[in-house]
Image (cartoon, rainbow, N blue to C red):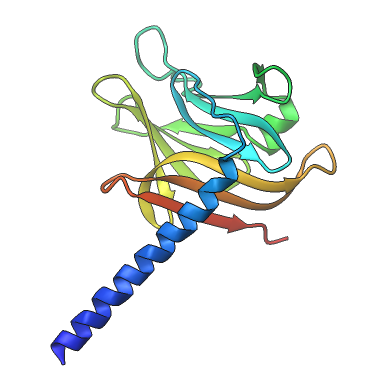
Length: 187
């Protein structure tokens, strides 16, 4: 009886893992026809279903090699629909779409917590590793993960797009296995 229970447990675990991997593997293909930004100190980026313009989130490292205390993360457009140039977010984009709110974490030097204004339920921790390379962590599918990219399925109908879903892709911190989570708009 113990062997049957163990076999069922192992089979369920393998089946569950394959479902997660299949989700990730099938959904990561949404990025196939999109350019990949390569900006210095990039943490992650957001791409949308209605065009290839990309929002980049990058660590803002000061002259002393530390995260800038006033603005540890900078957010900007990579305008691939034009010539790939960098452009600042407009006030409305920063306030309602892609901007961030950040604050230092007490008792942890050079470490900040931030949230995206449009995804308040997901918080991020940014710090620098021993070599000065920026690291960002969050929870994806209830796992500690390093976020890599986000895909937003939306329709551009007004000044701000109508969002249908947000898909978050990353790697689990401990295992480096791909992780994926989808948030559907509840409206």
